[in-house]
Length: 372
Image (cartoon, rainbow, N blue to C red):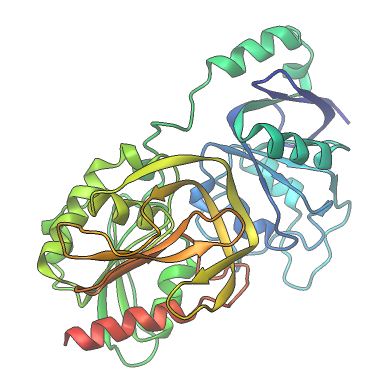
């Protein structure tokens, strides 16, 4: 096996062996705590320009298949695992994970210290990093490689949604009788999201990230959806402007993850970068209205800065923080009190799991029914 190095911008270096494609790759170093769903993680557009370390020690056991991808390709900038599976074993498998990484040019590394890496990031926060493998790991030396990492772009200020979005509109047909028309703005949408809406009788028109208010409303939608996605919400003014035009009309709105951050900005709130971010399928979130706690799937490094001590004024009437994270208290949801608009910071499409929050799609459908 060829040598590989993982170099963090604070100077920490991890030695390992090449996994997947060989070469070099740069990105933000983050970790994912999910014990399942590595294929969904790899193909989630929200992970664009991120090097993802898996905290689960065995990765690749079930190989890869044609049913679980959340987009048309692997989206991560790089991949870090502890022990890659030597054999893929599952009745749905069409190949091995290592082969998929190689075929798509994704540079990875296997290191014995993924626990040490995770603890380091938990102390120091997410940071820039790079993987160098094969001949790229041999020269010109660790100091020179570190300097290259420190010159690489930061995630703050990065406008990535338009990079991963569809370039042309497409339609996901309703399963069974059509009940609603939904305009879904693709800021990095996962394939399971329009599928979950189609299961509820929604005909989902998926639109490019840079779609204007006019583009969205031209569909005469019963509801508008803004998806998850990568990058800094402070750099996506085009999405904020489009959403403000939608909110002006009173059309029912639902946003998740990046869409929640864009909703917050449309309401006049700020956003900020989390030191660690939330990535995994075990985040406890509380609905402040009901007190119910959902264990939820997350993938975000930014959050909305909103007052949690009661309703606050916006250009669209009073709003409130609807959900909070029970680990660190950050905002996990927003809603307008006098208009049919709400958002959450997590992933109710539950790919892969858990399914606690799937009822949020039903809530969106109820808002569309009420508007009729």
